[in-house]
Image 1: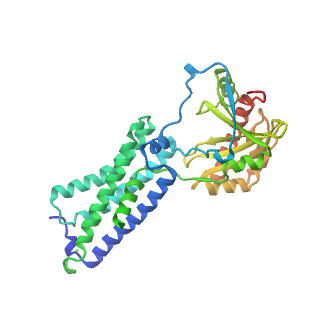
Image 2: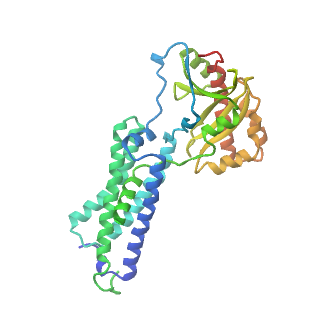
Image 3: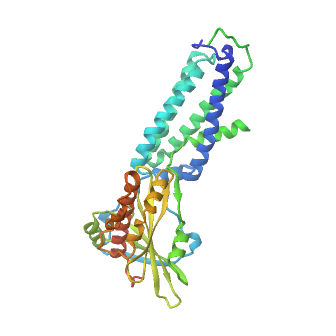
Length: 185
Length: 186
């Protein structure tokens, strides 16, 4: 038994929970488009966004510079490679992790009313907070040169998606059942 | 289906958080607009120890990438009409990139901010609006790029900071061009 039952909660509580989840999904669609445009959807592209630039290998550097010149097709000139440097990642981390915490806390408020078994409720709550933390853990590991952890960032995104869908599905199921009870929350 | 779309968006939307860059002018357009030419070429210079030492001595700066690209245009007689390079500086608000074109005399003929980010774009535009970018024109290696900031007294805060970063990028570009670009290089 949770702290309250969303199924038997006041209609306004149900409305607030459902609209929050729908608006969150709406925001996620644009987050998806942003990532698709600026970072990429594959481990290779995610890693390329966060990997530090190759440093000068002075040990194996030739004494003299050497140059090669090739014809240029202006239609093939690459634009600036989009990367996230350490300072930008610090900035991204400080705001995004805080937002993740707030979103997870709000999801937890809904989860507490979903009449789930305690073990399942706790699992989803831990997953909600944990995936947010692992998302940025993956980005920082890439930044530290461990490019193989791009999968962790992507998997964490999928994990957050799963938590969101589970909560959304259960919230929608709790909507029609039970008449609004003004005496409960 | 709607749920699936939201799922996909949620999953991948939460997977990374880049600061969106804003391309103010495409590289190809910058090259085409600032270098009138019959043909265009790209010269990739791999920095050697001697030149790296010279770059560090001149600017205290170590390039991130050992390969530096110069984009050059040539007229019908094979004479170089201009050389462009793009120099990036990182900020806590994402990278800024400056495009520089050097004329046949080796002086800057054009300096333009080619890429900013969603956050920095308004500050960059305010800095550019002060007109200080014109101060870079005519500069050569050895000139102090920060002298162009003399016209930015009315700027303050972030636009002033952006102007200083742009000057840093130009200064590094001057050093890279002066040190690495040799007209006779194959």
